[in-house]
Image (cartoon, rainbow, N blue to C red; front, side, top):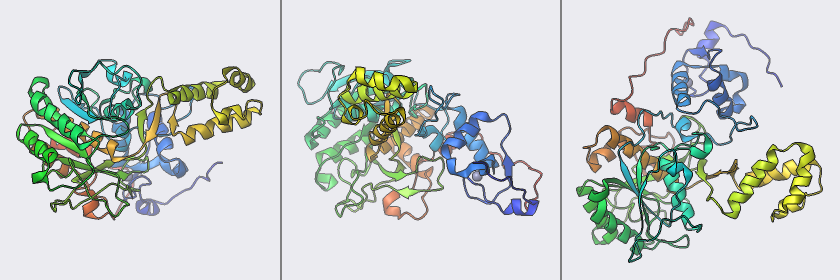
Length: 462
Ligand SMILES: [Zn+2]
């Protein structure tokens, strides 16, 4: 389906909004050699068609800069574009900062030494089962409790090792301390309290500056009477910033933010739905919890993407085997599909049902399973929740501390808030200062040159 070439007069051109940011600005054609950028635009804005070829100078510059932080090839082995855009593209983040020299502790139900944390450099400095009396073994065994913490750590600090660098976290050089404070079934307030207490006793030893808590207590308690919130305040005084997920109850009557996210010094992170797109253009809210808290505090302070987040599948689980098998099937030529399916006898009803079907039917079953399980290739899937918004903010806090190691928790928090951008049409109590903006942060930290005004394009924009 080819679009009919359009000819536009210079006057008409001057009134045409940029197809990406919708601002009326002079548009420039993409350079013919910008094939990597075209590929990215094709993936991010498939519906724009030929309109993708002319963007405003600011969009071209920002997207090209984000594009340069990614590997050259955005396609999988079969040349298919990946369905979920990396956060670096959507947030227009670059690699000037990556949390180098900063240690982030995570409190979660469990963890896994995923290749994205172990390669090319092993960055897990310490693992501790906080609720046990003796230190536990490194969690190499497969346990579903490991899944959640593996995802939060990789979203924050993964190297993208299993995705050729594509799904790299923004703090891909940070060091990690992993604290198991519960199980997949439940993380109790006592677990969170014990985890924060452990950090208090050990942060100097490991140089911990940030604690990511993508879990919460059950009941709202005034912060002055809540041991969890009091620990957050004590940690802040000792130079450790606690970054908390706001929770996912924005659609319920009880949408209140609770501990540790309700502590005054915590940086509380809500979610927003960026539609898997770069920029702020087509925002939809996400059902993240919001204040005021029981003490009347406005929470969250900021929001970050909370849906369409690429996260690893727990290795050596049935889900991982299925994802790898579907990826393998998908690559096979038609005539090998049915025989491979029959030989493998994979215990998945959708697949056994099509064992003798035509290649087209088998391929439809593969695609449907991948969609249903939200799979991205053999190693990742896409997930949602403020559990993933918080680690994105934690990564940006690590940027600040990499650039300014002496910054206090309060300064880090204030800088993230000052650099956020409010979402239009979303009530302030749901988003605080708005969406995190890595580029503004880089600029504030002196790591990004001022963006130049649009160069002349030969089009009169009077
Ligand atoms: Zn634009």
